Image (cartoon, rainbow, N blue to C red; front, side, top):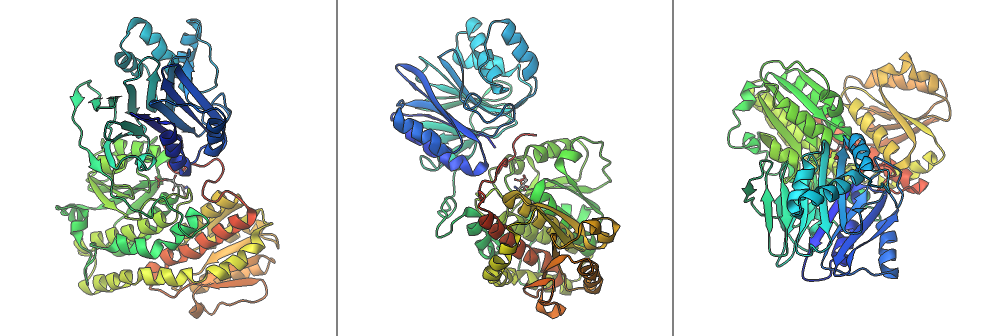
Amino acid sequence: MCGIVGAIAQRNVAKILLEGLSRLEYRGYDSSGVAINNETGVRAHRAVGKVQALRDKFDAVPLDGKQGIAHTRWATHGKPTEANAHPHFSGDDLALVHNGIIENHAPLRRELKEKGYEFKSETDTEVIVHLIHDALKSEPDFLQAVKNTLKRLEGAFAIAVTLNHENERMIAARKGSPLVVGVGIEENFVASDQLALLHVTDQFIFLEEGDVVEVTRDGVTIFDAQDTVQDRPVHVFNHNVDATDKGEYRHYMMKEIYEQPKVIAACLEGRISETKVLTSCFGVDSSFLKDIENVHIVACGTSYHAGMVAKYWIEDLAGLPCSVEVASEYRYRKVAVPKNTLFLTLSQSGETADTLAALRMAKELGYLTSLAICNVPSSTLVRESALTLLTNAGAEIGVASTKAFTTQLTALLITSIAIASEKGALSAEKEAELVTSMRSLPAHIDEALKQDAAIKKVSDRFANKHNALFLGRGPMFPIALEGSLKLKEISYIHAEAYPAGELKHGPLALVDEDMPIITLVPHNNMLDKLKSNLQEVAARGGELYVFADKDTDLHNEDGVIFTEVPKVDEILEPIVHTIPLQLLSYHVAVVKGTDVDQPRNLAKSVTVE
Ligand code: M6R
């Protein structure tokens, strides 16, 4: 999604801004731009494609100045062209970058056109900069003119604005899109993501909904939604040296796949004892666990798939009804909330617009409490939820979620066991058994990663495929969904997932020798039923890619390509079976030569509807 960086310093900020944009590349974008203030005015470069194209423009025509704003754009209104790339200008003096969507841009555009403003782009953003320009005609104070303008905007935004002759301050604001202030020594910054500023500071102030901030070299003044000056705390970033470095790996995605044993161990740390889940991991007061009678899980994409697995665990272990829904649907319907229902959100980024909107709606609906399982401690979701369980996966840079997913599953298993135990649905012996299994998880993931070379070989067979079917049963069905999403996202192969028992109700019509069928085989009472489903496919000439442990008695044979998955306790199977599917989609994408870490059209953090 779009990214913002702004800087005001005693030194030239061009390099700082360009480096900030490079650090935001992982979020997904299609064009970029920078505007710099100096004594001669505000000047900009914009470029379509990678930030390198923008750097090339700076090499050809350098822009120097001690104040500037920069942006990576992920197209929503208008194609990815140079004209649509930010910063947008009104006249030569006023430049602005924007994340989010202005929903009332059409009437505002009409109004501004009637006043004689000419639009150079198709973006919704351009209305904001012209509105500020117009406001400055009757309100000469820059800060006040921006504040007056923001009152007219409907939708979501984070903005940074710079004005010629105002070389001592820039203005930024947020409502619905994240924005942080980076605090330096005689220099200050803003950005949509703190990772964009780690090369210049590790001290951050997280702006809240409705905040407007005046940023100077010497300090920042924050006005809240009621226009009252607020003193917000400065947080020191906990550096994880690995986070933004690919190390020995060709892609972040592969690095993140291989980090899973380590981050799953980090997710478990301090949350389980020898025999129990430590309910203190939800905060000092964990009494809410006893009161839960229902669970509603709401999330998007991969996080939604993690929620679907948890439904099986919560209903099985705790015996409580659990429903799972995508946030973009939940937020627009009338929801019936049974008494004592836990509202549980899942999000890697904690900034997904639909999930945040769902949480805000849920807060009005009388839930027992809200719990966020999230990877980013400073995120809006964490700050706005009553309770949090962090996944501790470390920064995930690849757009395709991998370690965030398996740590979400780990955190959900912790939560399911905690609820079951506190509700009295789990004996002490069973809880101890489950906890012992969980402790073995990092080692099993390590074991699963050993199939990398074998899976790489299998992936060659996918290079010319246009479609794929994924099958699973029980909690392996959401894993099949996740496997198909991974393949779609990074290799652009159309893939669908079905509960294996559904095959004969329609999708079997698609099966022929060109259709790879990827099947996740659990080692439980569904094994024989699944084997029958495989027969249905084999009988129609379909090519079967089977992922199973060796005791399932499945192996390579005509039409069956077998990949071994470590044998683990049933409860862990969905987590361990995820690994080969991640590796498969990764290697297929590499064979196909796609942009693995930044697949086309996608963004890491989906901060718009
Ligand atoms: O940050 P979140 O977990 O809330 O993001 C939700 C989805 O946008 C995300 O999982 C998306 O589906 C990933 N690209 C999947 O790999």
